[in-house]
Length: 605
Picture 1 (cartoon, rainbow, N blue to C red):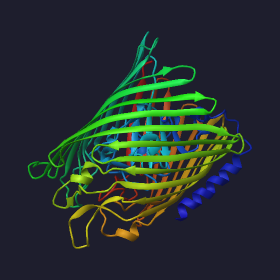
Picture 2 (cartoon, rainbow, N blue to C red; picture 1 turned 90 degrees about the horizontal axis):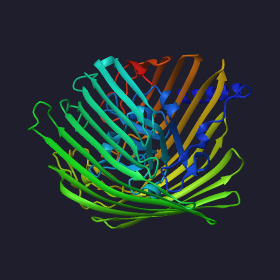
Picture 3 (cartoon, rainbow, N blue to C red; picture 1 turned 180 degrees about the vertical axis):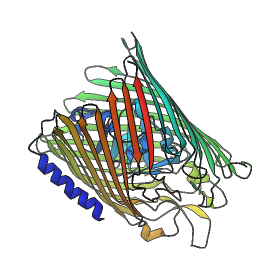
Picture 4 (tube, rainbow, N blue to C red; picture 1 turned 135 degrees about the horizontal axis):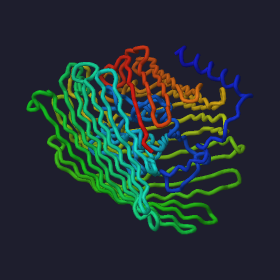
């Protein structure tokens, strides 16, 4: 652990050394409106732990996909299998991949089959305006899948009239190409993006062929605007050791994820209403032997049809947020069966001020046709200490119903359990935030008491069959620190950002050597990013990530990027795992060795 703490000390020395020479304009981040909630609040006024990844952060991240990008933020654990985000699982603050909700422009992308497909819905970074990371109990705002947090990807509103073309090539036979088009017409605007990513793989049977299609349109924008979003992602990849066991070298998987949604908004002086309808589909085909699918094959197709009405009402007493979310889920599977579920969730919250306090109590009540009614109450409280300093705290209950995989999956080594109980937790958090044009930072302490957590457990070390089981109570405690510092050097803006998360839970005391999925959480996580510009057209980024997992595995990874801008032409070089660290993030899959990706982008606008 010497490396991260030495870097923290060095970082604060740098901050002190530069504190007298800063002439940076006000950070626009403070003016960002968090619009994934019903009560819209400026980022600075929110009383939760929320990280905002801006479009500038994305550009300076040395990342080419969302999975790699999210790894750079403390408290978020992306466990990847390979390159280009082909397969990755999303965790927040020690929760499982079924316990974190992903949203696209506020549309819930949960999958009833398994949270293992969450990152299948992640969009190309070219169409992303920002990403909102909401940490802690978020069920009263988003519903039951936001057990430990939620991530909302906010897409760009428009690109005026523009055409951008990119091409990339690099290690492991990587070949990528894409085009992004923006059209701003008299009564409508449109964004269209198409890309293709292929690779021969960095070891046997890790090749991939991935495609992304994205359309966002605003119609009738001169009167009552209607927004449409449509996405389709297809991934085909060799899955050497991805699942099953390390010796399963010939596995193969294909996934498809699609979404189409329509949203509009009605406003009066006091009342805002936002109706939305959407359809989400996910298809997952897995074969144990790539060249002989008849040996073992799973095909799962899930469809979710949803309708929402969210709103807010302003009065002298404050702002009241309310909403109703109706959805029907269907699954057709040769392993899990043909099943369906109807869900209804009612949301209610009210934000008001009392002297220097802002208080927001709220509750969500959900009905599941195959379970029961569940309520998720919670409250956020913030205390304004100065214009730039705020203390806050929040508490809340959260639940998660079992996925269809938890309930019904069945193969030679894994058995579901139709009698599983619902996961429950009570979470608390206190923290402090500071904002200024030059420096922003936050410090939070959190605690989560959970019971009935679902894991696949075997009764003893000689038994090879894992059964879905509600395990005993689990307590999770943690500390999280985030900071970013902006300074000028030679007239150019430079940024140094760091994050640290410490997490401790007692899950190892209960089922060590018997669990298939619940282990391997991040005990220590340190991230830092240095984004510099020393010349007019040249910028550099260096990213360092340290991880120590509860299993004892520890590793340090360095990434970097260089961008040269020549008016309409941009040339990039991205280097990952520069010092060739040997490490595993998920299962039995060693991550790629050091590799390079060269990119060229031309803007026709």
